[in-house]
Structures are given as C-alpha cells and as structure tokens.
Length: 397
Image (cartoon, rainbow, N blue to C red):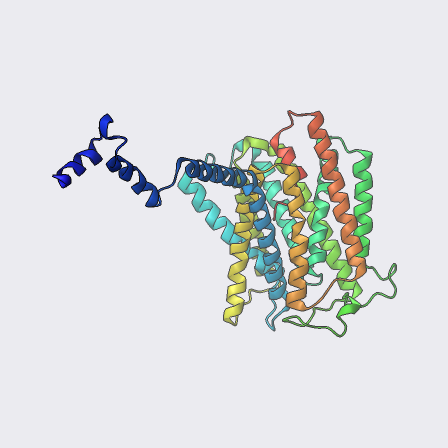
C-alpha cells in the first residue's frame, strides 16, 4: 500500500498532503539534482544581455580593426613580392591580381542579388563613376609603387594625408568650406612628409638606406632590409603623395555621387578600371611583362593580395556602417602599429627618428581635420552620411 500512495502524491498532490514528508521529498529532489534557481536564471539572462549589448556597441570597431590588420598584411605581401625574391613583381601586376579578384567577386554578388543598375549604374552618374574609378586606380598605383622603396610604416602614414586633401579637393571642386585650421593642418602634414622623405638638400647626412642606426648591428628579421637611396625615396614619396591626392579626389567624387549609385557599383567601377588599365599598361609597355610565380610561397603571397584586398573592402564598409565616424577614425590609425610590427618581424628594421616625427605630424594633422569635421557635424546635425564617411578617410583603395 505504501508504494501505491507515492505515485498519486507526486503526480497530483492535494492540499492535505502538501505539508507531509512525501511532498517535502518531491520538492527537494529537483534542487539537489542541479536545476537552476530563478535567481540564477535572472543572473544568466542579465549576463547574456550585457554581452549582446557589448557586441552590438563594438562590433563595428572590431570590423574596422580587422580591416586595418588586413590592410597592413596586404602592404607587407606587396612589398615582399616587389623586393623580397629574385623574381620581382611590378606594382601593376599586383594591382591586376588584387582588383581582378575584387571585380569578379563583386560582380557575381551584384548579379546574384540583382543590385539595381548593375553593372553601369544610373545614366546620369556614369561619368562621375568613371572619374571615381580612374582616381581610385591612380591612388592605388601610387601606394603600391611607393612600397618598392619606402618602409610600410612610411608609405602607410602618407595615406593619412587623405582627410586634409579631401577637404581641399571639396573646396576647389565643390565650393565647400576650407577653414584656416584645415589649411594649417595641411601645412603641418606637409612638414611631416618632408621628415619622412628626407630629401638630400634638407638632410645632407641622410643614411642612404633610410634605416635607423639602431639596426646597424641588429638584423633579426626574416629577410634583409631593403635599401633605397635618397633619390629613390623622394620619387616614392612623390608617388605616395600623388596617390593620396587621387584617393582624395575619389572620395570627393563619391561625395557628389551620394546615394544615386549603389556602393558596390562604385567599388566595381574602381575594380574594373584598375584591372583593365593595369593589364593594358603591362601589355603595351616594352619593359613590363607578367611574372609567373616560381615557388609556392610566391603563389600564396600573390593570392593573399586578392583575398586581403577583398576582406579589407568588406570589413571597412561593414565597420563604417555600424560605427560612428569619430571612433572608427581612431582605430584606422592602428594600421601604423601593425606596419611597425611587420617591419620589425619581417625585415628587422625600425624607422629612424625623423620618420617617427613625420608620422606624428601627419597623424596630428589628420586628427585635427577630423575634429574640425566633427564640430561641423555638431553644428549641422542634418549632414548626410557620405560626409561622415569622408571624415573617417581611409577606404583601402
């Protein structure tokens, strides 16, 4: 009989038995079995809510951070292919590989998603898209060519001229305000460029290698350092400045295009024009030709150019869409940290003090311009999103 009374008590307890020993045992069993209490459930939910809120607040910054990492990796692999092997790859061939990858992936995606006005864009903005593509291609060539003779950190920091140059181009072409503070920032950045270029007439005792004296007896890199004389450095710096100006022109054109063209259509113009122009110049120029990778390492590096370039575009776009321009701009400068680390690990070199000083001046000028634009946004809260993206500069061409 005792066994017959246990089952009904557990399944259908009544009021008369609720205080008895049997009911007490049925209450204690789940607790001793490890099931969470109501308080523990509340704490777990609060933890996951905080974690989700942290993710939503900072995922954009994380994307921008990863984009800068891939930008530095792309610069490293470019310089390795241009200088690190017996077979030297020209900047135009590297551009061809990278932008062909971007063009193919972008075109397939837009075709699959049926993006409006793919592939040529609206009739009224095709001329502007063409200018955007030409300017972007020129900017990319300036950066990649400079990597043949400049350290990654020096070539990278020159790209931080883009915000100042964009403000100047928008003043000339779009009649937008160009303040005295922005002009002073431009002058400060120019002085910084001189410290990086170290022309012979200003730095007569400049070391031809352009490397820090600290590295004279300390070469712990994977490869020997790449040497460049003052003339080669000056030409490379001039190409990097030209590339930054072309990139600023591309951003100003994007500003004019606005939302009349899908962002992927704009990127695809850039990718297609860079692919076609680099291929055509290599085929026409008598001293240029396509090099075939001779080792598996060269094949991996060449393929990684396309992958890194595509991931840079995607992550930077996603990050800027999710994050405020000010916070995103601050993380863009982490590319300098990656560049310095890669320089030290791969080539065992550290830029000289003049390069560090020039970098500080250029970054300070870029931050100054960004703060000016942030103040303008606060005065004009209705300013459009394109302008905010312009203030965050560095879309990796």
